[in-house]
Image (cartoon, rainbow, N blue to C red; front, top):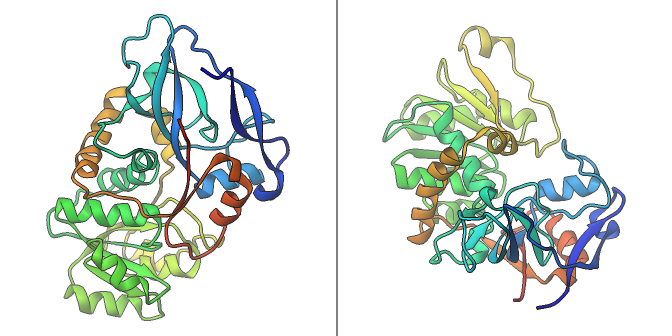
Length: 331
């Protein structure tokens, strides 16, 4: 067994492709209650890039290893560990820094993954599918046949919401900016895909035959979010979980006074911090079941080795990607 590992590290905040480097570190050792996980895959999420840039709400002490999501295999156990076993495939918690070949983790924070789920897909189940699942369940009690609307529908969280809704019998209205996404998202189970425009509300009403839309998922902000909010029925809820436009959410008084709309926020990190082990397991269980049947998949555009970290973060920062950028680790 090698005595050292490679890890991506940044010592100062800045442009990720410029400040990130790969260094050699001592191999971690499992302390009491810990497991050493050898990483198999880790995606590059926008939040990871924001953390390197110094723009994320949580700033770990520097030098730091990025990576809020990843999956690996348990290679070593410390004293007193009974919740996982050597050889288990696991999802690691969000505060580890997954862009490294191995890490020591509190064993009770690991989530064991069914072996039928390939590591790259398992590595991407913890953030976007969980975000989509919780937003679809925690704010409005949707019934079979109900509609919800979302912008950024081609994002990883948006695609997860489409796939989850298809499985649970809910209907999705998906607002996008590029026409080539229409057929692609319909192929993933979207019921309605519409290009964003000034008369969005009229088009939604026409296609849904005036059915009430009681839930909106917003990851954009600005004027786009306002047009999405205008499609909602009275007493509906908009959940904001991102701000891709970098523009604030400005709501006219009329939507509050006459429609009594409710505006909430969701941050999956806060949910994890508050959730019990049982609550985490209950959320993962249906997602695992869908992933095993091939009904929940995150689209991958390209895989990189850790040694290609600079190229990987530059790729992940591109606009209009067709899927996720992922580190795949050799064992």
